[in-house]
Length: 124
Image (cartoon, rainbow, N blue to C red; front, side, top):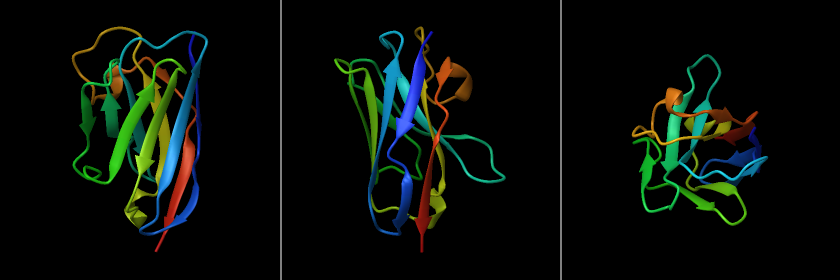
């Protein structure tokens, strides 16, 4: 089994930055990982994803140019650097991991493990 634990969320002013971290324990993640978010009353949506070797990254249009996903395979860690934050970025952010190869990196069903989430609140 794999456990994913997010950290780094909190309250930040619009225009500010936050770095989220996700620690994977139990087993080494050898496939893709991603970040999703869910705002109150909305469905969970894709934010960013990264392949195992870090060579390919994917972003939602709403965060492209502002967020950067990265990973440290030696430490079994995933990160999301969020800059130029906007109030509409307010959500619970979830880390997700694939346990086998998926061609898809964006869909929720392409991920096998999920963290409990960390709240990010952006004030205007």
